[in-house]
Amino acid sequence: MRGYLQPELLGLQQLFTNCVMSIPEYQRSYAWERRQWEDLWSDVSDGLESGTDHFLGTVVLRESNDHRMDARGRVVRVFDVVDGQQRLTTLVLLLLALFDQFRDEPIGVGIWLDFIEQDGIARLELGGTNNQYFKNVVDAVRSAQGIPRSPRTTNARIEDCLSFFRDKLNAFKQVTGALKPEEFVAFIRERLRLLRFVTDNEALAIKTFQAVNDRGKPLTLLDKTKSLFMFNIIRYVNGDDDLFNQVQDAFGQIYESFDQAMDLARSHGVQYLINPRYRFGEEELLNFTYHHSALHLIKRYGLTHAYAYSLGAEKVYEDFLKRTLYELRKQQLTLKSFIAEFMEDFVTVAQSLTSLLSELPSRSSLSNLLQRQGLNASVYPLLIGLKAREMLDEKMLQAISVLDLRVYKVRGTDPRADLYKKGVSVIRDGISYESIYSTIVGFTRFWGSDAALDGYLRQGVYRQPYVPFILSEMVTVESGKPDDSFSEVLSVCQVDHILPQKPMVDVTTCGFASDDEYFSEINKFGNLCLLEQRLNGGAANVPLAIKAGYYIQSDLKATRVLGHMLKETGFRREDIGKRLETIIAFFREHWPIPAGETALIPEENDDEEGSSTSSPSPDSV
Image 1 (cartoon, one colour):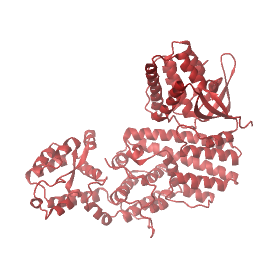
Image 2: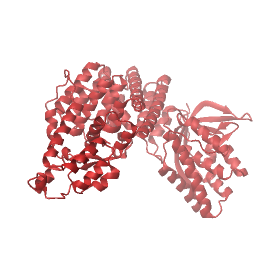
Image 3: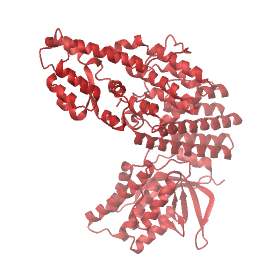
């Protein structure tokens, strides 16, 4: 083993000379976005203006045993990119755009041969999802064709990055008057510099990856987890090739599954996964895996630390994984087995999320839960765990829907201890379908009984995010068998006050004793209905006779009926009470606590509010 070579500060030309940069399958897909592209372009344009060298960061390479042979019989070295793949990919996209500018000049040919492809050997080879798409992009640029579109977000970033640099080069040319090819390309070749670390020692490559403070996107928790496992394999399991390859392959599948999941979530509008408000990221896969597997692994490997239901992703990395690997480092076979089993579960959990989302178009109950009801963040590990064990049939899905709505939405608490300790964490440990189902029922019965929820449903609920969902379910049931057009109507509906928020008449004529009593009632369920956005603006704070005209125009039958009632008999305090009782009766009938034995006995001093690390529930549609 040669170990480290001295770090070398190289220009881009030297970095690419007589070599291929290969991004391994286990690396993440292309993830840089406009902010990182802007930073890179700023380095280029600033350097051109100042005439100075610009440092772009570091790359960590491991020399591969794979070698290529060019047309003249020369050996072309192949390097696996341990760190720096995002930057290298972006630089090559800049060079593709630059080739586009000068494709008809000798300098353009030089760019192609030195940085893109020569003798059929690509200078940069991407992995995973990006591999074939990047080849298609290179082929399109070579033949001056339009760039192919891809439904995958990671590939769309490649296309957008290339377009970004094309636009920047065109704008730069216009601003400077004339883009001098020789000067510009010489700067790119020689004055853009990177610090290169090269080793044939896997442990040193990974250690360097961990230590280098690089530009671009900071290391994610999954990046650190990957390098932690790889380093422990090399350091404490004698560099076991099979296990090392398993970890590499597993992370490739995890990154791919996450990318697929996010594409599906964006396609189907799953707000918890895509809305920045909820801050969902790939690190949640690590969190899901911990809650799915930790109790089983603690028992199996006799670990000294206990399962903690409130652990978030960062703590999973620090307090569970690092601690466990340290604890087992002197037990080579045990450490090897733990890593292999954890990675199997990690892949299973990631693929289970993707599989769930792929079912949305064909499984209405799941679509209703994730897209319209908006499953609370704290309940996702339960859903994923059950999917991983193929226990998520319609009966179980309905029980989860009831649990989520009654406990996490209407009651608005997060009593995670019981659910996680006696439900989520034991799924992987072999609990039966009947046991987990009865645990869910018991949990719902204790925290979300009709008696417990009665007061919540009777108070002012106007601002509660579950209100539009419950009202939309009511009008859906009343409509019979809605079609796609009905769903489109619901998607543009808003909650409207029947009696306006500002009284238009003497409130005593509507059955109220005083203004205070009026204002105490108008935000209750019985005074709320759904109305399309196009009508809602006109119906706000107007007399009932005018409001009735807007309601009658609605595409929702229930709202039209309400409009005719307003027109004929008006709407009084007692009508709010009657409508409230109707809604409560609908709620109890539509989301009843499932019958059956319960396996959950809540702990006497359970922390009802749970952990502050949990995310809020997405608003209902």
